[in-house]
Image 1 (spheres, rainbow, N blue to C red):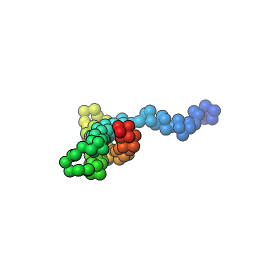
Image 2: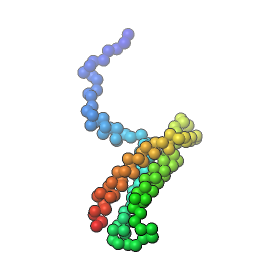
Image 3: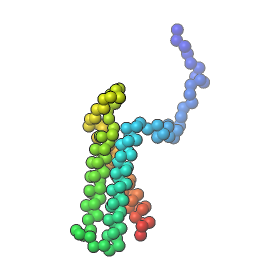
Image 4: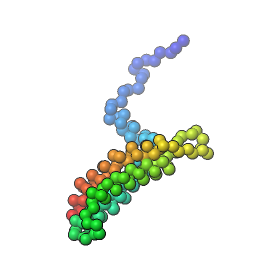
Length: 135
């Protein structure tokens, strides 16, 4: 004999915002690690780019001239590459055993796909918000 539940005893449906907030608060550890790795790399490299941009803006004569476009391209490649590599190293594949840690290409792919929007967003914040504040 199966037991029937009273429809009023079911949990209340959550709104879209409540569901997304819960997902944000309880993000899986591999995703948090991938985002943290890419974000830290992007912030360091964007800071270096800002220093270069400010130096050029203040009239510094640097060897090679104005290479900001190349610097942004190198920034993107490095954030994507290093973000993928670091995620590959810090996000092992689940095995069920604490003694065995396996890695595969999926960890690197997770890092790559986490790095794509982060590279863009960090550079937008650096160039559109922080750069005007620096003069």
